Length: 248
Image (cartoon, rainbow, N blue to C red; front, side, top):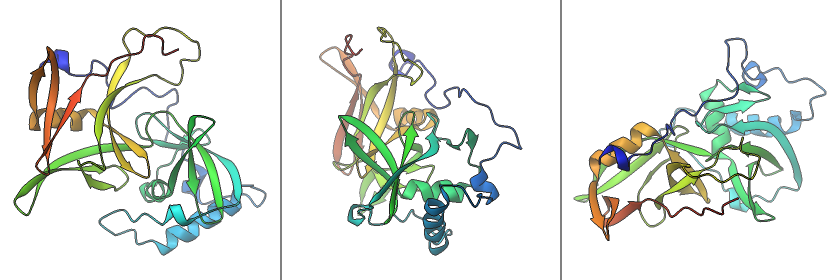
């Protein structure tokens, strides 16, 4: 695929409006919640789940979130940055095992027509902020299963899945959260996404997407170029989306 068919902006490492220093780790990493911290109860539930989970497992274990119906609803100052980093109270969460735990209880709901994200436990559901996609794909490989090749993706938080009908892939424009004013965007950042689980999507990072370009085949249909990917004996096409100039 030539340069004109690759995304023009770096969707792997968007600039964050905050920078971290060694002493700016989240208090989750410091295990030092105050006795009066209203988040103590929520952290207790998550900590209990963390202790019961096996951190050495090779694949992410997802609890039965659909069967949980918590009655306590609240907010927690956690942000999933557009580059996949997790932040708490303006500071990065450094412990990968903790981020992995949080990712395992990610939940999405549509409220008043808007996608809203939560950390969900059997007792509580805590709203968080997501700048782009809640998950990030950082690897893809061609694997063989009964003499059939599949494209297998991995996320930074432990999800492993294959490109198939349940995990569709596509391109769509990304509009930065900093764009508060209703202005016309003539050249938005086009990014690749794939559905992972429970309606949660993942952004495919730059290096992984370029690997997909090498794996796939560039084809042209009706004067439009697309990337043809084959997985499980079926073909999937990545085409540039039609942009709505009246998006705002």
